[in-house]
Image (cartoon, rainbow, N blue to C red; front, side):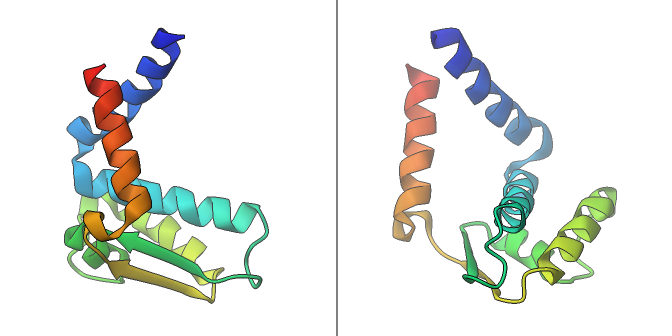
Length: 113
């Protein structure tokens, strides 16, 4: 059981190390867009995504600041975001976002345990 949880954690932390925290946050947002669409919430509820990374937020809004090497990912995100008319992306500190703060602390405790 320990090995399963540890492997899952390693996948996340390896992605952060390899791609950087900004791109990892972008990929999490892309996943949130996909889940929101696939579970059928489009038109039923707004999607509000709070980010603690100002760089990632700047990349999400159509911007010339996007890294070229990930342009296809941003193109896919733009396509997904257009399907969700009621969406909002906002910058927030992790301490003000209780769920993100809790998940980050859980990940750190699994890493140290």
